[in-house]
Image (cartoon, rainbow, N blue to C red; front, side, top):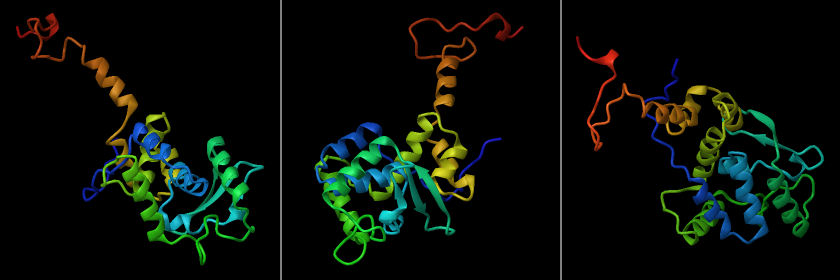
Length: 209
């Protein structure tokens, strides 16, 4: 059975792996690099970044406590080694109290609009399209996880979706197994390829009597 996303959902605006690399290549500030790495790897909305505290980060166990905005869901997510590395570098330069916001501003956590402006600055510096927003990082990791071979259920859990139909939109834009199948079927004698230099010939079983 194929799970279809709701009809009103638009295709997500996600960055390719090359575009993600270009984005991070222009970020030198340790805090900003840590901020957007966490947003990308953990599929965080801007509002969810504001909920992160220093005590939510456990380097010993390699875990990050993530609180979702929708439904009040929370989960412990595995820290990638690269994420832990950029966070350690950031915190070495800017130590924080356990109850402090993980990414503090002048008063409390960094403001939502401030994060969005910082993202836009690096996006433009990297020469990326202006249609990309901070939310594109969330779309990007969902797409990249599927391309890496993760199941739709794993991506659903990672994004904190309660309904897998919300996650299924990513399967509509990327599916390595479906692509591999279609590439193999392309060379089947049962599939007509009219724009070739060689005459089209059907297999004997497919010819009309």
